Amino acid sequence: MKVGLYPALNDTNVDANQTTSQRQLSLAISAISESLDRSVPLNLCLVLDHSGSMHGRPLETVKKAAMRLIERLSPGDRISVVAFDHRAKVLVSNQKIENLDAIAKQIQRLDADGGTAIDEGLKLGIEEVAKGKHDTVSQLFLLTDGENEHGDNKRCLKLAELAVEHKLTLNTLGFGANWNQDVLE
Picture (cartoon, helix red, strand yellow):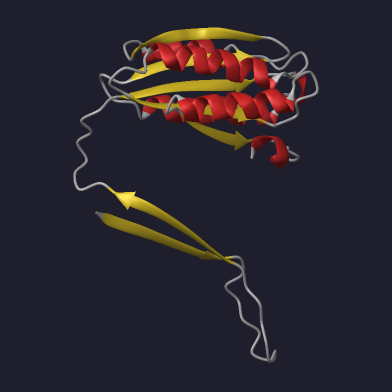
């Protein structure tokens, strides 16, 4: 197996007049596939926050990110889309990729409104991705600002543990200037 290493410094400039200097180094490591041919289809569920706190740029950025994710899907992959504010609803039920335009239209219709209950979105997302779990690699992407004023953070943690038990990979992506890292971790 090949491994990719991706280093990044927080500041690449060095002051020659300083006797010491501190830098932060981040290092990303990833496995590199021997071939680009995937033998197992992806089962992707997007869980999208469209609550009132996502108004403006955060929601527009979430929509763009969701579009980029679905554009990368291959024939045979599966998709489902869940949207939530203080309630969750299925926009696209778990299905094989067929009509990306129809999926895109559902995502583009989202407006920011209501409170936020991340746990409701997660629960419904896990239910949807579980429908296509057989013979696939299941990934759930939660796109939110992490403001969970109508939700239960402990329930979010239990749902994340449930996802792990069912071999579902849960990815959380924070949006907005003040996204809540504590909830998303």
